[in-house]
Image (cartoon, rainbow over all chains, first blue to last red; front, side, top):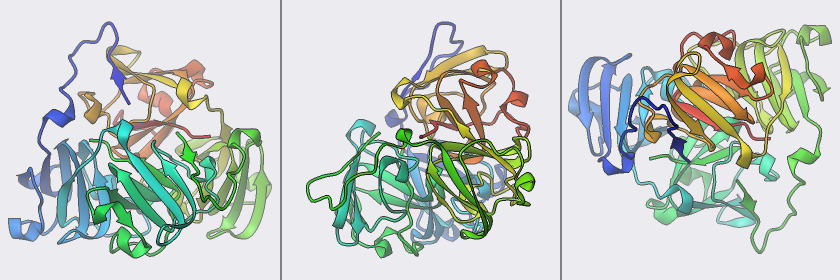
Length: 206
Length: 206
């Protein structure tokens, strides 16, 4: 992935994100209003920092995982560098409307070119299998015969899989540095996962 | 992008999607219920086919653009191969809740490796510029200094840009075969575009 600045570029590019430590700035009201707080490491519970919840945030560097509940529980939100002025900006699912993000932590990513993810038709790494090394907005378009995945093994990097094509719907974070990269059953994808319905998968961008 | 089937794969892969003509199957009720209709070409108006709207669909082949209103107007939905059991599965924006898709058409994609998109800080191809040849879930992470884009020139392929990082929020289809690839002003991104806020961009997958 690259953004090439051509002749006539009027501004220099910013340094690569990887040169910065992870940084998230959060507000307790939408559109970057109200109480403001900056974090460069895990936040286990926003109430412990005087926030009932987060209603807007900016990712200044790194990639972050946000969670519906304290203690990194509930619906997961992958937050990459940019501005999230309201709940709708980070929520993956329209069907499950809970305007809540009560914990968050940095995501350890690998170099994009070295990221590898194995997917299996059935739980416990059984059945038809495949390997991804690139982003995939539609697993069916690649020939994956089902709209579901039974289990994952993350060989390298951090990935986010989504319920529907085009990275829509509930999203689940898959990390080589977590669970030893083993996600043997839908129950291990995060406490919100109800089904193995997965139709798009991509690498997390740092 | 590839899905490699390793030793022990229990099923053959399906043929590449490009070997099939575009095909969408739509239902007038959610979860693939009610009146069913199959299309392999443009649908200018679902009411003309006896549908008030589409409430679920499956993309069997190709990539499709869905639109809120008849005549390919209103909010845009990029639909790649897979299953969309309800409105929430294809809507890009949680903030603008209209359960309506009244027209749709196939999208002409280029080979992924040959897709090229130029973006400009200001309208009419002015100001800081860059070129993309790969998917980008976060423009700020690539060093794009703003959360907005002023204009686009699609050199090759079909792209979808999104309001927020991670391909969330309102989405706008950019095609080399449309407007001669020129999107000089936010007004030309589609009749729903209100601002130039764009924080993620990717190629459409056929």
